[in-house]
Length: 559
Image (cartoon, rainbow, N blue to C red; front, top):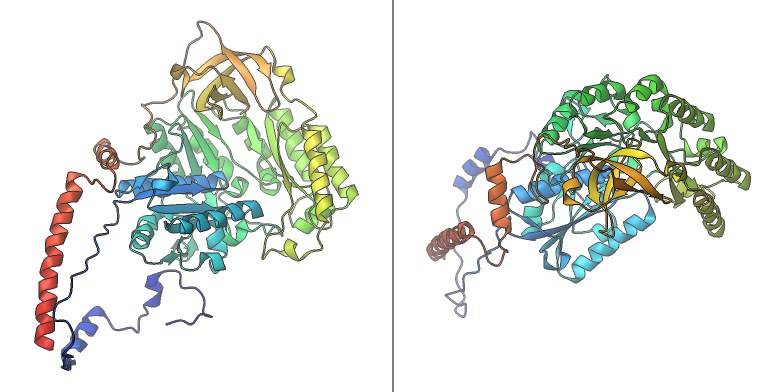
């Protein structure tokens, strides 16, 4: 067995080598073993109460919490779908759950803090715990993860195995990579059962990992180098999603712009294939892309983003407008590269929405560096801006650099936030008539949330007839992050879905009959099992009784 200092064993299969005896050889060796008789102590009781384990994996309730990006959200949906398909009941109430499945994010310290606190809370309530996501994948030996079962980011197709063992009180860790003839794969299969958080939206991870080595990034430690899914598998997944009533697809990864470079293809090739599958009125949203790789495809990307079934929206993180800071970050582009991307797309795709990210207070950032970033925001007035105060992540090169004082980081974050909130990006939209796709409910439950061609948020009346539909509205109010639209009278309500969407909690990828069975079994609690479970329990009780009799008989013969 390995010592505590040996590398972590990813899977139990890794412990078996070609030199180990086969099961047949082990069985043959047992024939030469003669059991020794042992004199029984006079005071030893001759009868003992039979103890049986009545825990049956697959009958428990599971609560899952996911932190982080849309890639992590998709992983969580896949894990929930597989668990539900195998008989577990997914619950929204952590208190009634038997097991907590915590799907973590390692991008920033606060996200990991929430994750760690949730583990402690579960343990304080005597809940079984299984952890997943980027934190345990990157740092499986953290003290607070000791004794916990872990599902690696490329092992989500084995979530049922891990949960089954955790329910029985065992600790299992699956951290290996998916490979085919030595080549790293994008991850688990895309056709696994899945429970979409929103039945109208399918999140598809097109690749995992990236080609960069940013000095501040912890995600690289978990997701690794670039590994892309084949075009045909992604197209088939999109096709299946539309057949299940989805009307909006999000493409996600750590860097969508790098897609395909490891398998001899590229992002525009994939996007043109996907566009062919999108029904009229349905929409495709492209995820985050870093500047270096999108620069090579600007002409094609402009054509794709102008397509009527693709949102004219692109998330391109700049992080800083200072070239010296970008160099320390190892971002592999300069500020002018970013400007070129934005200027080109704004010219070729009028009205396009460019979202970006900025880190305030990266190690070595001077006041002059920060002012360059402020000037970039003043120039482009990004309608969507993600502002992040720098947090040094353990194990990253940036954590070892000389840090900007905390009060300076905080002040710069405040200044940039104040600049962002000083302008209203949608004031000029007042009175416009727009076609919008309605997909969600607002946080306050007062409106439905829709998006126009530029993926700008439009709140519309909460009419059940609008959900999952393309409607025409007149904009009558604008805010910092939204517009409000009033339905144009006598305008048609268009249904983009080619079939009825799945119900909330319904498992994608299963037949109607299996979904019906899954719903039926979920309607009863684990303490009040279905008739099928009761019959199974009776049968197991009989088997245990027979085994107990056999054990007693064998012990009597031996002793």
